[in-house]
Image (cartoon, rainbow, N blue to C red; front, side, top):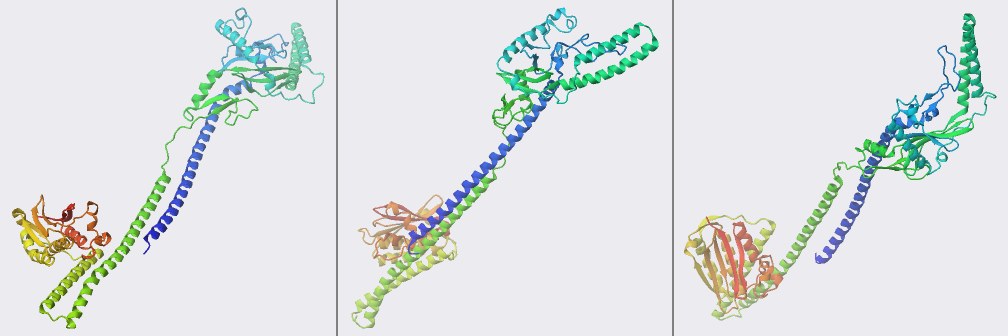
Length: 589
């Protein structure tokens, strides 16, 4: 992969496409879920509205049904019954008997006052009687307070009815039958009944038993025919329209039109809206706690949600909050996004590793090739001169042989580092063989090799061992410790060879729980910005420091790995312009 930037651009483009697709799918899914939830809430609200309307209509059914079917004659304080008879079952002449309306002392719920509007526009009420205290029929049953209240209400009702034409807002009664019986009227039937009654009374006064029995039988038969004929006449002449609720300003009335022959009047009741409204809302409080009832005019498009019995429209308000269902979509989308991001991160890490490995291989090949070319070139030149007999001086021959030996050692050290790094990279690093050894014994073991390396570089190794630190027992691999210290001294020899002070200090000091082996030189030092990078593989090749000093930048990386395998650590301290200091810390018992 010679173009990592292109690889990252392709990866970023692919990731952008995946993220855009996931974003689009997420937005669509969230929108659909929001619409589904909203539709569900709307369906629940409509179901609550339907049930609320049903409850309110049910609560009004008794009142509306009773007022819609109330006989028209009950809207008069006193009315003449259709059929009345004497104890001898003789019909009583019409007009001689009157009955009080039940509305005089009834108090139907939700009704303020009953009323009737005559054809001439006169408004009356069956609950208002002139001088009730002087009327023996109602004086004992109608209190003075109630009589005064009904009078005040009738006065207020007249003001209400003056706000609009009530009759025009009500449906017309059905038309009269086309085939009417001619010459049959209520008056004619009543006159006939009166004549029969007088005839029967005259027979009774004559005290003639047989004639009385005969006349009574005839009278009863004729009375039966009279009742049938009169019912047919009433059915033909009485026509009632359906009852309808009508708003007159802020007042609600329930009325219907009644036709008797050619005359027509309006009868109905004035409903108590102030008492009806809280009663109806109370019945639906559990369904719609914030609902409102407002007037609804007939024939106006003011929406649905209207009661069937009265012109009222329900404003449901917000539906009561219900326990939210588990938000599985958010969990699923979160898991999907987490999977995509984790996959992208894993691919990025893997791609970074592949690119880094490719770069390390390229750097490794370049560094090793460069590092091997110099000693091989020197060795080839010196061996050709020695083999060709061009070197006759013994001292010069010895010098050439020493050079060849040094270059061979340099190559061996390079090969050892490369092999060790290859084992570390492949995870097949040789297992350490830790042993119990004192710090002093360990230093005595590695000291000759370190002094030999400093002598070859023309440097001086100064060893300082603290007595307490030298006696502490370490559980470490002596070979690994020797390799770490040798790499540190080797680096000091290469990078501090041009310093005026050619000393290399190896100090052993006790610490809190460890023993510290520090290697310090007086070279150019390591900048603070590069203090951490020097432990990375091929760090020297990337920094391009002292290209003629040898090495491929693997020594410190291998040394830190070896230190960690022994439970210790390798750090860089005092990175300044007065030299570099590396410290190997190993735990002691």
